[in-house]
Length: 179
Image (spheres, rainbow, N blue to C red):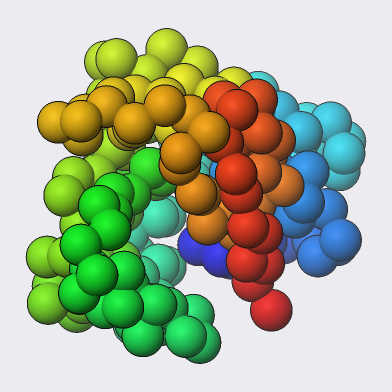
């Protein structure tokens, strides 16, 4: 959602409006791939590097409060508590950068304590390729002490590229889309 808001804002500067049906094409993908898609799709007269610079400069101005106000999806808290109370190991594998992740989770610290670890693919040197490659999920699973096999892992994912990554990792996946 954060990238959608940011991309829409930048597109407005070029007199363009983001078609929300395009979200599936860039959600969960590495930022450079998402930006490249936006530039090509909307025929913007700008380089990927310049777009990235603009987005970096505007990111915290426009989205800091949105990140801090990040709401849990319906049923998420109940599910996490149930799994945690039944000793099911939990971890987070995300395409978010650490700065973004910290802001998104700041108001949910009690719930976040249920997770054994988190892997933020853009900032993790072990994750070589972003989604839809399976790297982030394989690295995340490997950080559990008992190192579960991929088929023993259940992924909850909100992006099509994340679903593709989980399937490529050989894991079970449940798609939980944004409204």
